[in-house]
Length: 555
Image (cartoon, rainbow, N blue to C red; front, top):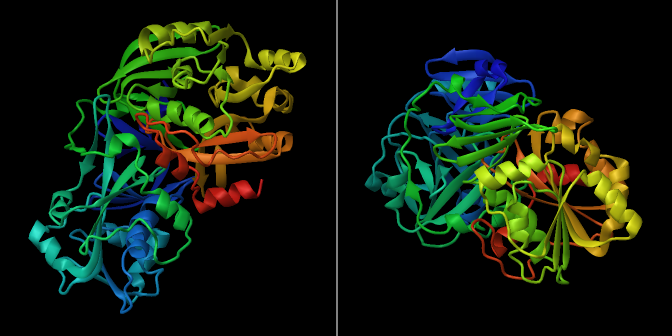
């Protein structure tokens, strides 16, 4: 599949059998550090094969820095900041935005990355600030804020780290998550165990798009045992603001308890030979170490099932991943429960457009108040293959009615007959050929007719924040965000919420709610606890990064 992608540069992360792949041009290599140019995402920096910095993606560095700096303190006398790692300058750049920061000490043992950051990255300017000092040995004194960067390997033991913290100090340690079919864990850096010795920590979740790869868990330790969940200082960045700050502490259900620490290991095969996804429009793809289980060309699309050592079964259409048994709960729970649990009036009738893997229907039917679910899937072979081989669990429920036909034709007939639904879920592919009949002015006009007065229609897509602005996966077939503009013209009201799905690479996964009267589902009205979803995650999902909220406001 798409053999030309085998020559793209692949990140060492997000995991041993999973790589993000990028079409890049190399600028300079120094030791184990490399600087790249990417057509859409700007400058990139990799160290020892792991992507450390992406110009268009500020999520990780802004959240790691400002959760500690805005949530800690207050420090009337100013704050000294120690950064372990941080060769790209991103954490230092963010720390310097606060006037109460008096000094930033960056402790790195390999200066090659710093040299490239100075020459090639916008954040590299931080190393020229007089408040910044570079050291390669333990610094003197104590610090109000300690930021431990991902993959930092500076030689600090538990007692040494504790000795560096001031009595009113806060330490933020970052680790990548590892999702598997059996458990969720962490790929923790060498300093994670040292930080654990500091005592209890609050846990925050950062959904990142490209760097450092999907979800990052931040553990925040305060010397005084206090909380960082409420910002005491106000800052607004590209990704961070006070609402996003608070939302970061809403933990998905499967990350609430103890997390298994996973050790990095070298893959058994060359990633260049792995299956590469066909999402190439933004110069970004993913490679997965998989073995083929089934493949067939239906009358509509290529259907494939693979096995992956960590993600389990992987279901793809026309070379694009639709879901895995390890992470499908994120998408299916968020696309269903926000709309249903957030409704003031109990929804009775639900329409699912697509949904051939059966996951959305499974989640809808968890709600006992639902009287009827109509599922309209165009491809009978998708239904059969997923029932046999993807096995999310085909619901056996008299409330479920299946229609195998083009959803555009079904909606046209329903609109003509005056049929109404309380919730409509568009669970269709966003870039493959069978879905193109759904992204039209006529379809949205008829969809509005089929929606109840206080109902909502839920749609979704990957949204990338490149240097050229926001764009969606389906934009390969038109101008950026053109489809959202069609929806705005038809409905007038769009409410958005976000999450991340590890195997939907390249951007934040955004859910859009279209309504006739601008109804909101921001607040859960009923308590639902699922594998990923819970009421806290529900509320937090509506805290949009400023760059995305501002883009939607300009539609």
